[in-house]
Image (cartoon, rainbow, N blue to C red):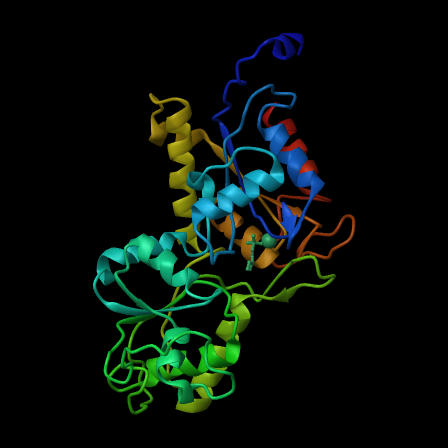
Length: 347
Ligand code: G3P
Ligand code: MG
């Protein structure tokens, strides 16, 4: 290793492998950054027995911020450069819907303020409203809160139909968002104020099925999946069990893994522009490190990736345990041990 210490050049790439890290419960817990996360990413940067760098992406069911903002935040916290092209958020692959809905009015749900509406606009959705906008225009639509502290919205949502409902992120106001979303989905004319029917008015897109996720609280917290459960229960209660069709994004669904794999292809091309991507795909081993068996391990196993489960988040099994429903290829204490195991597997 002596020549490495003397050399100033960045270590060469090892493109036969790639890693997809989950974020919450693996690299960070809420506002807290795990030391093992910093160590893991330093190791992937070449500080390992291979003496080579391994490409990686962050594959999270989180969202509500732009990929660039998430990359900047995690670069600062984890102490390694991470670009927006290495970040897959729950809603990132929903960009593909923008062509279909570029000019169509869509209801974007979740997150703080208008942040998700702004993200949707940056993806190419040109006509976006939020439940907050609807309530600002029609305060009695959700009477159980003070009106938003900004000028009343002038758009008449009783006359302005929607073409889709898209849940981008965790609801920050379950009650309001259950009311407004069921209003739109049941409305005969797909407005927020139309007479209700028992037939779904417009497509529903969901971005993160996680019932729970892990932050700094000692036990897992409700995630976006908890909102879906409530929405389905409200829909069933109101319609007597009519079907509610929906399209899912996020882990463990394949769409997320295909998207991540394309980012990994691009990272390989950036590292070695003459790379033959189909040959690379045939030989590359992709490792996924996660804390939630139902999302990270189920998805990785389904995509044919090598799954590594850690004990720093949702999974609460002790030493020697694995998840009985979605067993991981390897179970370790934390993400630094996961990377150690990956490096040893690649030696
Ligand atoms: O809200 C985020 C959470 O549901 C999952 O985040 O990084 O563990 O996939 P992550
Ligand atoms: Mg997680």
